[in-house]
Length: 413
Image (cartoon, rainbow, N blue to C red; front, top):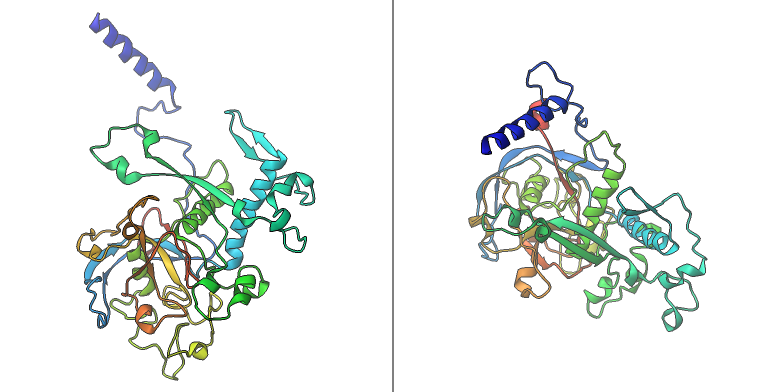
């Protein structure tokens, strides 16, 4: 009986193999009609080539922290935004979430063959329709009778897989145990301009910085770590939605790891203290090379009182602007003081997805580059610093990275 069953299964398998493709030559030729892939060149991003570098303090450790001990590492090639994400770019994300909520309320939905609902973007939104009143401030919350969107309602939900847990030999659960679901309010905290400074008049920035066209090309601030992660997920969806069904989806947009950020900031100059490749913050003419705090209370000496446009100053040799100064930048990496001692030397990184009830120390995420309010020590490419993932600051922004798939561009040359 077992022999009969074996032959029946073997026969079925042979029939399946003979009928599943058009290859009747008997030669191994791989699966045909695969999606095309010629690589991508995302707008506004530059390629950072694969290579080896030494991470760690490039100058004197003036605070004697010993948190950035020298280490030789190799980094796989990746794309990185040439500038920090601007107010206007982040506003596109805010508008998308706002419009998605409005379409859902209005019932502008379609259903596919599998019962999944999605928005029909062909419909125009009538913002005067009373059906959308729930999206606006009402009653005592309305200011002078203005019809203003209630930003507390601008929430974005996304899902991601815990790959580290999935790879653990001890994991014996089901796939649903690996899927994490997040929902976060994505509107920037504009009140950081007041909260971050005591006895300082910054209300005009709180009212205007994110919305006024004068600041469209300035870096977005007031964004928490999870808000930056939500933006990366939305950007991935935006990119993939523009691809045809015959094209493969790209790898996900994400925050750069701490070591990727440092490697990119050095611009190909190993052990350089600053992105421009020297140990000084001024050029031969005495001009400051970044937006930071060069002296006590002398904020405007570098040409910017607070933040400046994201393409101000000269880029480094990879074509990246403001890797030091302007705003510090979120990275993917969890902050641990002696992390370099434990990281692998191939694409090193340390991740920890902190829960709401975790201790504050476990919610620290690495920020890099220093900002407009920092002294030059924090601008050095090897200086590590951190912020809590659930805090927003007037001096912290971000930029995205994207892993390059396939052989290094350098090899192709």
